[in-house]
Length: 263
Image 1: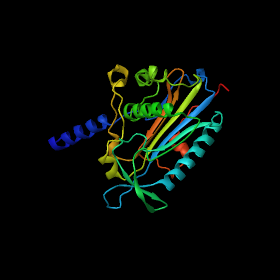
Image 2: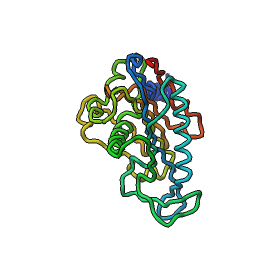
Image 3: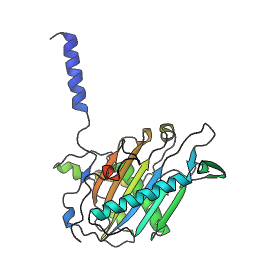
Image 4: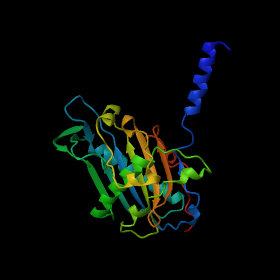
């Protein structure tokens, strides 16, 4: 084999060997042993645009319309999977953005006089202000540390760290509650690169099982979803995608979502 061909050979197979393995989908192997009587839905969706002005643009009408559509789609899929109708939800835009990031406010593409500061919109049903703060913290942890982890079926190492543990103990919810978290950022790529979107929790970084730090999410559009059981703190399922968008079926993001077999 000639030297050039030999070098090409090792480069090719070396790169192939370095490719990420596994799937972004995680499934807890014993979901049939988890009792879930209600699901709380938390959706954070953001799609900022640039009109070459001083600030990025946020249209509250289209964001709220998309959030409402997502909630209806999610509720439908949850019921198809055997879960009860959604009674509690939190819909937000910019829940995980630092508070010093103002945007120009539009309603149906009509510029308003006031700037908006994150979260740019917030709508809730049967969720208290204290719970909103907790959801903000927990969603930040999930997106930063869990979203881009890859998992290999039947690999015990894949299950390490997929547990929120004591973080959920203080949440004032029945233990048989599950929370479906979704974080979707479809903003222009330049915007995603500009701001630091994720609020970090220092406490979790000291735990060995959570020492994994995911791929930088500030470089491209992405969507992540997580189903967490309150009583155990166990992440029952999660998925992450840099290809999914709100014009695609929600089932593509909720891939391999667990059935509720205990009702």
